[in-house]
Every structure is written in structure tokens, then in C-alpha cells.
Length: 567
Image (cartoon, rainbow, N blue to C red):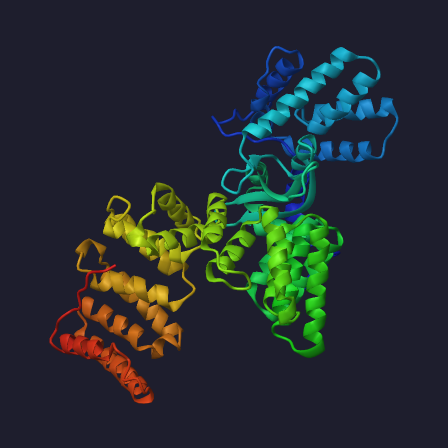
């Protein structure tokens, strides 16, 4: 593991980016900025004299300057000095210096407003108050704070300052960087001062990141390198992000490092790190036994309780799962339901879906499908993919789909578009293919089928998609080459799948659909042999599909393909 105290090449390359991202400024989309300093200077002159109210143009004009990074470094220095200063004269000097570095700095206008009103200069105080209101309104109008529509800011500092003005308290933070498209976001968990619920709020840092890359050129770090460098520099939000990336690698060494960084971020009070560290401890505990496993579970509970104390409904949900698992004894499982209810009261979508499943099936609680569906509708309306899919499946499974309406279709489509649910992709594609509850669109259907197979973590979904692509009677649903590629990959990489007669049947049908009947026969013979062996082991005369496998074998021997009305 890298020594956090030792500078690295990535750290050196990232220093300028770190300075840029230390302070925030709204970034707005629009026309291409003029690559000169004059535009910014003209705008500042007009804003300061009251001849313009185009505060929304200020961030873009500032980032277009060649010296914006140097100015931000100066701004960082002045803000650092202001945090330890109390003399009014000196604070006034520092505030003016901040505005000279960047005229849109929220803290500067806030500081100068307070000083002006304190000294009786109401006109000056009113100007800075209005400027502050305009700048905060620019951020407010730039998005909604969701992952798909984040607020536009330059960095974490402006996000924190802006949320303070919105009467929010921040409990945790992490960065979300995508190296493929060069985007960088800040995710905060915060709550209004008059509320108990923590909400996940997203801020877009991409415009500043890309402006900095313009300065660094070929020596620019990508988002993941930048996050790693910030983690080593002591940024708890970056440490949390870096730890999650390491955890997903799955190796023993990366797991040790992930725990290290999460522990550091948790010690700083980052609620997201505490939530994640509790989950990590719980997962590791399942690979241990005896006293070591108990100690890990105790550590997980400690982290969850710390997070609950900060208002985390996610930690309540995770604690509920621990109790429901029976870890604390079957007599304590009802406590898990109570914890889920508390999380639901705080609008936790995961808890809504899990509690809905329990009520739907009558597990740990009396069966109440009406109450379950109400919870699912809340979760679906909140954008929870699993809740959207569960609700849609329920409607489709009752009374020939009676009750499945435009809203249910929209939620199913959103679940598919989330990229989190291969099941939703497959079901939505099926409705499009059949023209049920939606206009028939076979092109989009095939696209969703392929995405489902790409996203799937289970062999059954891949097999289902491949079967559709190679045997569908509706020719515009077919793509035999893609179906064969899916089955080749599955059957050569998954030993269990390679011994499944149904999957072998699909694999053989894929070769037949591509004209290779010799290979189809060889594979189908394996499918029949596996099914016959299963038949010999069972007492109920199964499997029922053995005659069908033999029928397909004859087709392939005769140079015929399989064709069915699917999906």
C-alpha cells in the first residue's frame, strides 16, 4: 500500500487540480466562452456597478481565463487566513481580496455583507446580500440535486457553503468519478436543520475539472487518480470513494486497504464511510467463524449505530437486515422489522422494498398485500428500480395484467434505464416485442434484450436472451450471431452452466441457427445425456423436457433449426 505521506507522480500532477477543486463556483452550460480575460473583467465591472445582473454568466467567464487556477490558489490562501481571523479591518481586507480573486465567491459576499451591516453601511451590506442571493439562486436553478440532474458547482467548498445557506447540515461526502467520460461529482448526505432525514445530494464538478485539464494538458490525472491523490492528502470524501473502488476489486489486499481508508474516513465522522464500513465488516464476517466473526459483527453494529446517531436511515436498514438474518437469534428477528419500519418512516427506499416483500409474502409479519403494494408504489415513485420492477411484475401476474397502466409502464422503463436491473430490461423488452401495454417496437426490444444479457449476473437471464435471439419465429427479433456469442461465453466460463441440459439445448440451437449443424448435434447429444442422467437419478420420471431435447436433436441431425413463438 502506498505511504500516504510520500508524494507520488499522480499527487504532483494532481496538485493544481486539488487547488482548483478546493473552492466552489457554479458552472453553467451555454455558448462557448471567449478565451480571454477581458470578458470576465467586463462582467465583473458591470456586476459591481449594478449595470448588470448576469451573475449566471460569471462562472463560465471565470473558467475561461488562463489564470483561473492561480486565482483559485490565491482564493484558497485568503479563505484559510479568514478562518482564523477576528479583527473586522483584517476580515474586510481578506474579503475584498477574495472577491478580487473570484468575484463570485459565496463566502466573500457573506463575510462582507455581515461586516457592512455591523458597521452601519446598509447600502454596501444590501449589495452583498443581493449578490449572495443571486449566486445561490444560480446554483439552485442549475439542477435538482439528483444523480441525473446534479447542481453545478466548482467544488466541495462551494457546495458546503451553499448548503449552509439552504439551512442544511452535512453528515457525509464522497466523490464519484468516471474515467471513461471524464466526469467528476460530489455526493453529500445532508439534512435540513428542521428535519431528521438525511438525503443524498449530488453536485457536478466536471466543468472545473475539465477546465483544469485544459491547463494541465497531457499531464492531467483522470478522475480516479485524482480521487486517490486526495485520499492520500487526507480528504475523507475521497478516502470513502477510494475505499469503495478498492472494495469492488475483490482481492484480499484491496479489501485490507479498503477497510483502512474507510476507518480513516469514519474517524472523521463521515456517515457514508460508517455505513459502508459496517457493510464491509458484515461481509467479511461471513467468511470467518467463531470469535473472529462475532468481533466483526460487533464492529459492524458499532459503525451502524454511529451512523444512526447521525440520522442515517441506510444504517437502520442494514441493522434491520442483520436482525432478520437471525444473527442475534430468532427471538430477536421481530426487532429487524421494527428497524425497517423506522427506516421507512425516514423515507428509505431500500427499507420500503424489503418491508413490502415481507408483507407480500407474510414473512415475520402477517401477510398484507395491500399494504405491501402501497410501500412498493412509494418506492417506485422514489425511483427505486427493484420496487418499480416488483410492482410491475405484480400487476402483470394478476388478472391478465389488469391494473397495469401507463404509470406502471413508465416505472418499468425507468427501472430498465437505471442500468441496475437486468430483469427489468428483459421484462420491458418483452412487452415491446409483444406490443403489450406499449406500441410494438422490435428494434428497441432486441436492444433491451442484449443490454439485459450484458448486465446479467445470472446464467438464466443470458440463456433466456440467447434463446430469443436464435429461435424467435418473429425474424426481426433474431440475431443468431449475437446469441451464439452469448452462449459461447457463458458455457466456456461457467462450469455449472456447461452441465445444465437446458443451457446446452440453447447452445446447440445457437450453432444450428448459424448453420453449423455438426457442432449443434455434438452439443445436443451432451444435453440429452445430462437429462438422461438426471432422469435416472429421479423417481418422478423427470425431467419433463427430455422428449423435447431428443426432438431438437433429430432436427439438428436433419439440418433443421428450432423456431418458437418467443418471448
